[in-house]
Length: 92
Image (cartoon, rainbow, N blue to C red; front, side, top):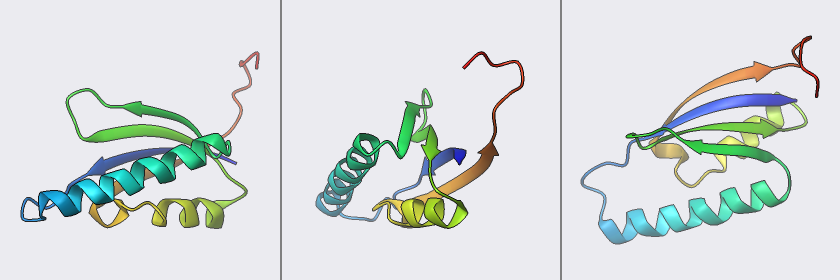
C-alpha cells in the first residue's frame, strides 16, 4: 500500500543541542535503512521549512503506523497521512 506522508518537525528550543543532534543522527540512519529496504520510496524536503513529503510502500495501515512511530523525531512531529492508489491515466 502506498501512502503520502507530510511531516513537520518542531524540536523544542529548550532541548539541548547535543541531544537534538543525536536524535537527528538516529533519524537519518533509520530513514536510510527504510529507504534501502524499499519502504521509504521517496523523500523530498519542503523548501524553507523543517518539513518533508514522503512516499511509503508498506503492507498495511498498521505497518505504516509502526514505521512512523519508530521515527526518532516522531515525538516532535506533526503528520498528515494520505492513502494513495493507481491513477487510471498513469502509464506506469
